[in-house]
Image (cartoon, rainbow over all chains, first blue to last red; front, side, top):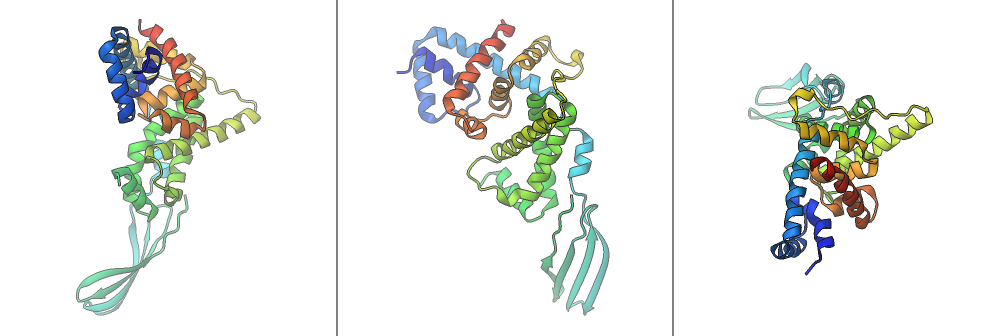
Length: 123
Length: 168
C-alpha cells in the first residue's frame, strides 16, 4: 500500500479525476485506512474547487480578439452558370471578410456536386 | 475520436463554423492561461490571438497523440514564452497582479485564493492552473512543460501548501 506522502502527492489529480485506474485504486485503499489523509483530501477538494472558481472568474478573451480571429460567414458575390438546370457547371466567388474562396460545382439532374473549392487563408 | 478532435479535423479542411466552435470552447481558457503566466492583459490578448490563429492555420498539424486541449495549451505556452522574451528584450517588466472581476461579485475566499495564486512563482501557478482549471493529468502537464513528472508533483506540493494556508 502507498504511504501518506505518496497519497497526498496524488490527491490533486484524484480530485480532478485524471489519475490512472491503478493510482486511483492505490489512493482509495490508502484513504480507507488513513483518517489524516481523508482530512487532507477534504482540504484538497475545497482548494481545487475554490481555485477553479477563482480562475473561472477571471476575465475571458476580449471581443476584439474574436473579431480579429473568427472568420465571417461566406457571402456569395458572383456566380457563373453554364449549361442547363439539369446538366451544367457553376463557378462561384464568395467573400468571408478576409478570404475570397472560389467554388466549382457540377449540376446533374438538379443535384449539385462540389468539384473544388479554393482555400486561401489571409488572417 | 472526441468532439474536439473531430472539430479540429474539420478546421483542417477550412470549415469556418468548426473553427468558431473551437474558438468558443477554448479562447477564454487560453486567455486565462496567458493571464496566469504573464499577468498582463495586453500580452494575454496577443497570446490568445496568435494561438487561435495558429489553430486555424495549423489544425492539420494535430497528430492526435494528445488531447486537443493539451495541444492548444502547448501552442499558447509557446506564444506566451515567445512574447515574454520580446518583452524582456524590450525591458518592459510585465508584473501586474492577475486581474479579478468586480470584487463584489466573487466570494471572499475566491478573492483570497486569487491573491494567493498571484503571489506564487510562475512555475507553481502554471501547474495549479493546468491541474485545477484546465483539468490536465500530471503526465500531460509534464509533457506540456517538458519536465519530469516528479517536478510537477513537487511544484504542486509547494503551491498547495501556500494556498491551503489561505483557506484555513
